[in-house]
Image (cartoon, rainbow, N blue to C red):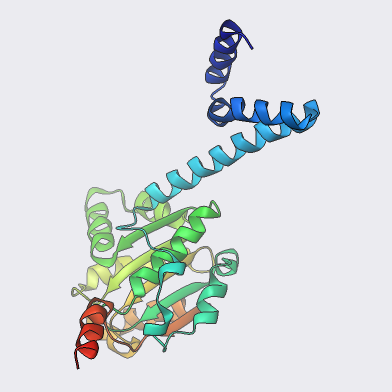
Length: 253
C-alpha cells in the first residue's frame, strides 16, 4: 500500500473516529495477507478491534463517573484474612444478578475489615457490565442533599441519584446525622426502593442506627427498606491496615 493511499485511509478512519481500526489495521492487514483471510474475515477482525476499544472507553468513562476513591477488585481481596466473610456468596454477587433484581448489599463491621474494598470491587464489576454506578460517602451525600434542600434543587439531586443502577453509600456511622439529614436520606432510600440497588457500609449494627440518626423511627424506616431485598454481611475480623504488622510480629516470635 502506497504512502499516499495509507495517508488517505488513515484520514478516513480519523474522520469516522474508528480509533481501534486506526491503531491496529496494519497488523491485521498483514495477518490477513499471511493467513489468506477472506474479505469478510478481514473486516470482522477490524470491527472486533473497534468494538473492543469502544467497550474499554465506555468502561473507563463509567468508572470515572462513579467517582471511586480508589480502584479495587474482588481478585485482590484476601478472603483468608477475613474468614467471617462468605467468599462463595461474594464471588457470586460479582455476576451482578443483584443489580438486575434491584437488591441491596449491606456490609457491617469495624473499620478496616474490607467493607469499602468489597463495595468498590462490586462497583467496578457493574461498570464493566455498563451499568450506571455512583460512589459517595454518607457525609458527602448528606452534605449534597442538605445543600440541595436549601437551594431548591433537592428533587433534581434525588432524581440524579435514583437514576443510577447501583449507588454505593460508604461509611455510615463515622459522623453523627441530624434529624433533617436522616429524613433526606430516607427520601433517597425510598425513591430507590425496588427501583435500584444500594451497597451500604457501616461500622455499626442495625440496633445502633437509631443513635446515629438521632431518630429511632426514621432509622427503623430506612433499615426496613434497605433489608427487604438485601444480602447482609457481618464482618468480624482484624483490620487490613494491621495485617502486615501482625504477620511481621508473628514471624519475629
